[in-house]
Length: 327
Ligand code: SIN
Image 1: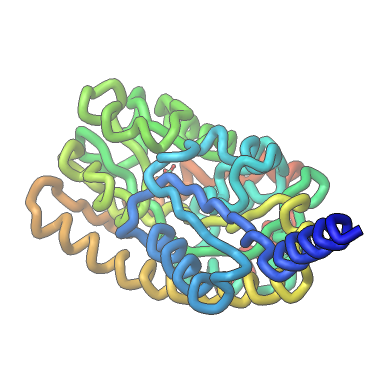
Image 2: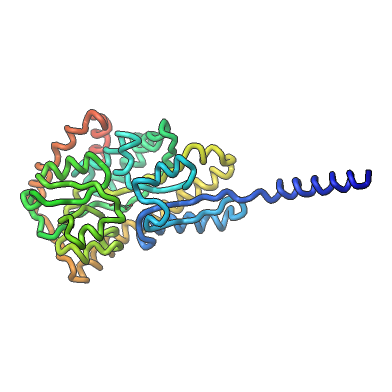
């Protein structure tokens, strides 16, 4: 009898202790860029805030530079539960939804302030839910910046791009954009871009100042045209399965930390756009070309028909709402 009582006490103590000391939730955040970028810094700030405020409940691990998953695998891995958070470029969701392709339409947003207005407006906020049917939750947008064109030869007018090979993200809109100027677009993961440029397997690519600088593309691309022809922003996502497995107070705290980390990342994005562009100019490795109004008008005229091509998939009203954000 004494033995039985001892066993019961031991069991009670064991289970009691487990209830009190439940293991923290592990949250892996995977991304493809360097740590000294808006996304890299945002992810680290998120980790820091979560550690400070809920270190006993949630532990965040950040994997930069495609260390854990590259672009083409991360969302599949998320649905399998192998990673809990990521922030792919908005151009990388085509397999899951058509509507986010709005962000790839060339010359749609005049600047990042217009992008911010659209994202925070009614239509932009609705788009956060566009992945729900696919088992993903959009938690917020993060900025990087406007895209520039880098190449092995100077690109001043659309005819200069003719026949040239450009790496693009996995987006049919971006494919159509380069085809519109008679160029050859190739969908390749971000992790391969530097080598493709260095070995001259491709002639150019489009990206933000921060990515061109942090991944050293400017060292292997003698010309960068300041085209600001499109936007490269991110959607921070998690899987529905992971998100609903969390207690509500944990969800609320995580969302709060994420919103703060995004605001921090957005400030860095604005600063880096200027600073990294200047670093590239100062390096003299790459010449930065500006377009005259007339040259720019030629790019707009050549690329804008892409809007019509994708209007059915994206929705004419959504395009109108995005255009309205320019005012
Ligand atoms: C990123 O900024 O996450 C990568 C962008 C790209 O694939 O060009």
